[in-house]
Image (tube, rainbow, N blue to C red; front, side, top):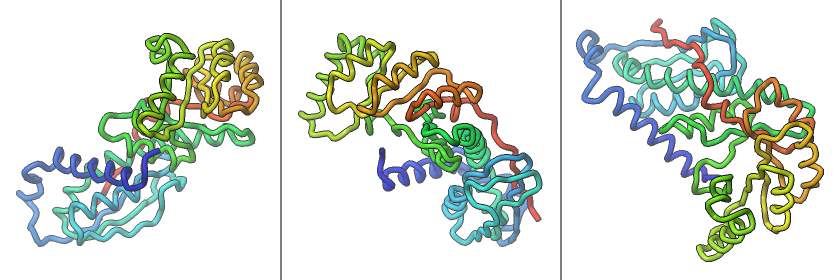
Length: 285
């Protein structure tokens, strides 16, 4: 996984690009009708039930826009919220509050939706030994926010990108000439380049799982698109020799049954690619 320093750089980049995209040469609407020295106060109002996420990120945005803005938080990331709750108050330059408004809302609405969906999976899997993982199926440019939201909802992050973990999927295996060649070439590459990266290998059948288990040093086997019966067989076959992960269209309706097969992880792209933004608003008071 990427370091905290790298992750913060991703967040800083999102903020700077978001401000560039939204404000550009200036917020002419505010400049046209609000005095430069006007002071104001606004509240972040919840208009939908769920899990709030992005409070700490909002504070970063406000600080970047204007270091003099003051944020008073009433709720924190991961808190359950209901309609009418106030998450925070922000006080300071009225122009600055308006500059930050849309970026704050866009980020928090998206993050809260992801955290809310993740929490549903987490609650569903309680009592099992299975953890829910995200994937790289994220919105271009804001992956760090979406993966952060997954952790706020109680889930776990898979690899951040292509550079922090080896994941040999079906196309890698087929292009390399099979599982045996793909794994051997990968280990050789890691050694030659002095890289310490975990290796995950996708299996499309029980036979492929047996081929993978012939190799030492595999961190996890990705059991892709297996039914319940074959997943149970796969878990017994792996028998703790490495971690196991199920993926492939797993939903809230099917996740519990896969977890009960004894799998270590379930990964779901739907955590980040299939959510509807939570309804939030920033209201002047």
